[in-house]
Length: 254
Image: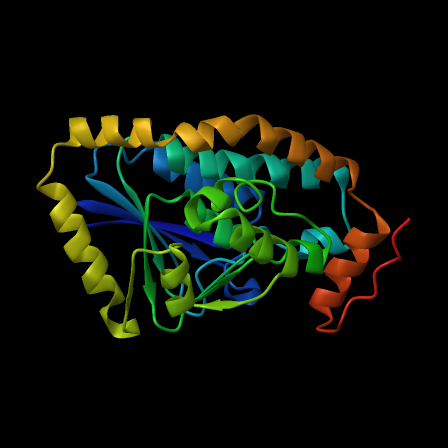
């Protein structure tokens, strides 16, 4: 069981995923607590999302995929989308302070955030087809708007890992800083945001959601397909091989 820590820091509310045994991957309960924290933080000037030491976020908990339960998996998928929607619909800027690996749904969380500052040691990438899933809530659609369609397909299909500098060059993050300067850099960004009009920042943010809103039906259809694939040979082999730290052997195409 992981934790979600919520703390005020200056003008911002910081939300920290804490599940070190699985690189801060979230289960449905953690995602729900993060959503509640976002909904309760509208009086802040900004919200910062980060991970406990050791990683940013590895997305949805893969241990749920190895022995999949349909209602539980449906809940995880729905809560993941609720989390990303809560980020996008929050009236204040939401900043990803990427202090380690942003993998799978953690990478999609970076896609959902308004701004992203990365530590030099941070890494980025999708894991879906490698672990028996697909990144349908951002990486197969909105990511293409952010970094270009071909690069987004490379990231979503091939499951490669990208350095912080590569993420900056692609346009996935705004800035890369030394690890020990991450918090101070995010604090300075929050202070800059605090000098601006909250009313007009909210208008700008709502207006910027045009591509996210256009892709929303695609998210739902993608999640519907994932639900239908729960318990498939590919899902079980992908998750099991990941947990066992071995190369997966997927069934051939049919």
